[in-house]
Image (tube, rainbow, N blue to C red):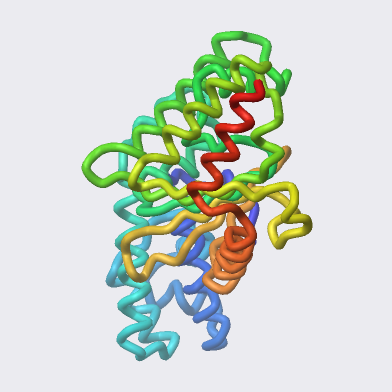
Length: 292
């Protein structure tokens, strides 16, 4: 797990950090120094530092040279590094709308991944997932945070959130699997009318062919994911490990390693098994909607 870094000029620091971390592990295992690695690349030690911290894209010749120097001769391992580097370079070149969106802030890095992801699994304790929110619900959330001085900033943030929802449509729609605790359905964000409309939209989204939505009912009691919400982002490429995004009040945490992301996936699956089936989930949502 690592906290979001502000270093470097990146579209996605996540993939770069993962690649750099693997290069660092290889160097440590080989007992080599950054200065020695730099000599192999005919570069400075500063370049090696930037590569290992994911601050810069890494070229194929550099990866091959380092693999040879570190004694990594497994063709599959080398290919995995090359594919990861290629994927990272492509992401850095992407010119997505989020890069110019006012007040996208820390969410920009997540949106960059979500925009090219094949699937997102979302676990939410108290909120409706951003990909399912109505304008009124999103606005009420931003107002409730109380950190805004200019109302226009609120509208800009709402627009960013709504624009993300385009990923659920199109020729290659994002596959979304959301599990939501029942408390989020009762939380009157914006008041009864706003919440009623939000629940109606949640039912509509649940009916999309690329969406699976389940509700974890109160009666389920304790469950594996009780500690907090998170999103698991998956990609179509076989070599791309799932990335977990955990957004806190003061910081964002990325879980980037295979073993750690697999733990989150296992916890998500266990919680999903405790949840209502999709059809029963929609029935519960509709019953709560009727009560408002």
